[in-house]
Length: 195
Image (tube, rainbow, N blue to C red; front, side, top):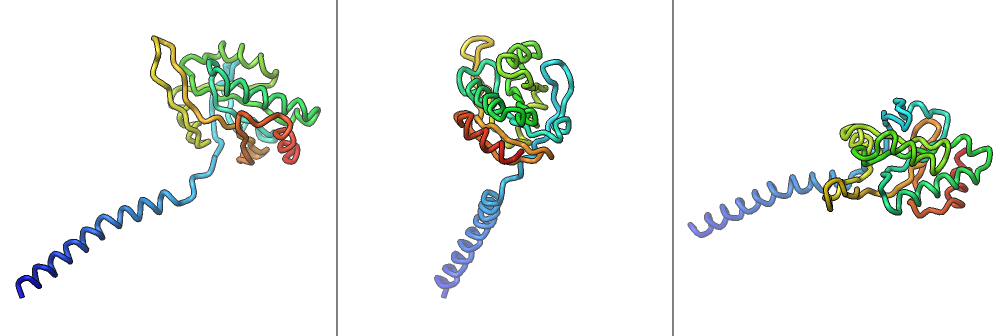
C-alpha cells in the first residue's frame, strides 16, 4: 500500500514537472512560429548634405534602400552599382525611383565621407546616417541584421550585415527585396511592374 501511494505521488510530481516545463516551452514555440513583424520602413536620418530626411519625404516615389557602409569591400559597392544601373535602365521612368544607402557604420561614415561616396554611384543617391541608436532603430524597422566586428587594429574593423536591397512603394510600404547579387536587368524588370 505504501509503495502504491509513493508511486502515485511520484507520478503526480513527474506530471507536474512536465506541465511546468512544457507550458513555457509551448509558449516559446508558438511565439517562434508566429509571423514576424512587418517591415515598417520607417526612418528619420540625416543625408550627406546635412539635411534631416524621413521615409515620409519620399512619398509618391519608389525607393530602393540598402544598408551598408563606405569601407565595405565588395557587397555594398556591388549592390549600389546594381541598384543605380537598374534605375538607369528604366530610362525616364527611373526618375520615379530614389536610391538610398543607410549606413550601418555612422562612426566612420560622416556626412563628408558619404557625400564623396554617393557621388561615385548616382547623382540622386541619398546617403543617410544617424546616431548609433537611430541606426539601430532604423535597422529594426527593416528587420535588418548588422554587427560591428572586433577591431583588427585601432580604428580598423568591418561591419557584418545582411545584404538586402528593399523596394518600397510610393506609400512607403514594403513591396519586395533583392540581394546585392541581383543583376540590374531583373531588378529593373521587377521595378517596372511596380511603376
